[in-house]
Amino acid sequence: MNEMPAMRAYVTAGDATRYDHQAEGSLRLDVTHSNLNQSFHDLLFDADVPISSVKLKLNRHCGTPPDCMELYLRRGNQMDTVFLYDDSKSLRQYGAQNGMEIHIKDIDPYSLSKGGGLEDVSLVEKYMISEEDYDKLENTVRKQVQAQKAKKQKEKEESGEAAREAIALEELNKLLEEVKVTFLIGARCEVQPGSRRGEVAYVGIPKKQSVVRVGVRLDEPQGSNNGEINGTRYFECPPGYGCFVLHTNVTVGDFPPTDPFASDDEF
Image (cartoon, rainbow, N blue to C red; front, side, top):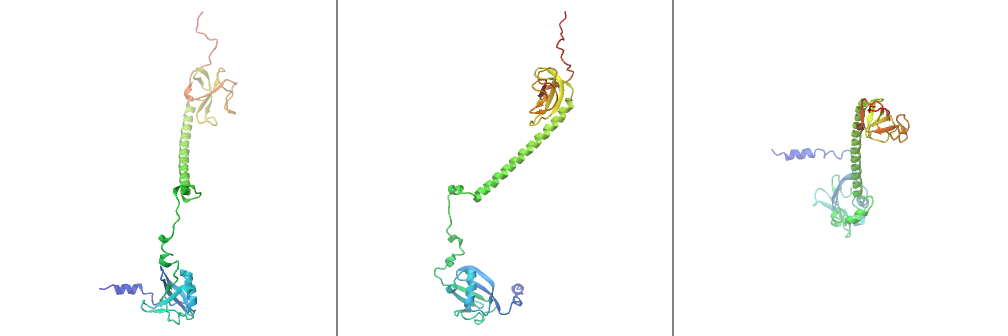
């Protein structure tokens, strides 16, 4: 069974009615050009305007000056072609009907469209610049791409740094809670170096520091401060009786105040 007639009937089913709602006195024509591969489908024309007006309209589509146009009306095939030589006549007078084709012959010997001049981009002279000179230019696409990459890399690094800082802070707070369990405020202790005795007066993370400190109120003036660091007071004690040390340098236990008059010598 030959399916081609059925296929053709399906594809062209709307052809008989495609112009039913078209305005009276108008024509829909296809347009081709001698120098262009591009064609224009179903352009709308007034059937009664002179060919000179038709040329003006076609000029807006293809760029060919009206006085450099020769127009031909093709009525079904290239063999049935009419030369529209009289600019005063209308398309209707030349027998134009919907679906026919107007062919534009560009007779300008210097036409820009000649030889693919308006369509073949390979004919266009391209601007060339060396890599060195291009890199000297500001606001180029390359520099914008490089800036975007640098921004993303910085954001990635900052994000990684923030994540590391968050982890470090979490670990520091965890250590602080563990130290607070062992080093209770008021507990007797001994501080190294020097086996200095006193009592725990503070456990925490001082301002502008990122380490857990144990503040000790010493029994004797063997310290370096009065319970204050960088203008912030953390506990009360006389000058020279306070110190802030790492918890690893402090031992909590039975460390009574040292009696300076006690002696193991027997008389």
